Image (spheres, rainbow, N blue to C red):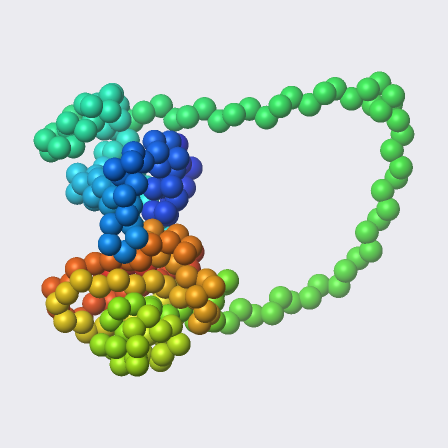
Length: 248
């Protein structure tokens, strides 16, 4: 993520967590599945990223996750993993005079081999003149936001389906769990009035469980889980990240 910050790259949560697990695999204890099928390690990682956001060292948005400027400086001020962890736990601010880390050096492209003498002296065939084209006007674009690669439908299938009006839970076909495309945001939206309790759900694309996305936007991943205090809650599905966020 630090290297991507220089190129304005924002990986989604699933990509970040998958990379973290690839670099440091879960222990036996961390691999244990909790309710909903989420490994204990995933829950610990999610909690850790929440602490980074709280410290102002990381941000999470619909366009992806990224390390903030303060977060980059923290890697300079607290050089070891232990020092960084301690600073995060103690709420130690990054010293004001801390510089940003050096920008990673881009890899140089391999040098091309010099052309042979024969190739350099070879005569080039004269280029044919391109026929003149008559100018044509491009068709006018329709007003509004253009959304490419959007699915035909997105449903929020979960254990609260019957509360919304479905006959059974986890049914992606019922009208009450269909999300609507928000033209301004380019995301799919559903607002539900739910009583207090714990809930699980997944995003089901094009009405079939053949394509579904769970926690962190992972295809066929573990269920999203959340504890709700009661009242209206709005879900947003972003087909670019395949993740579902809750908010306004």
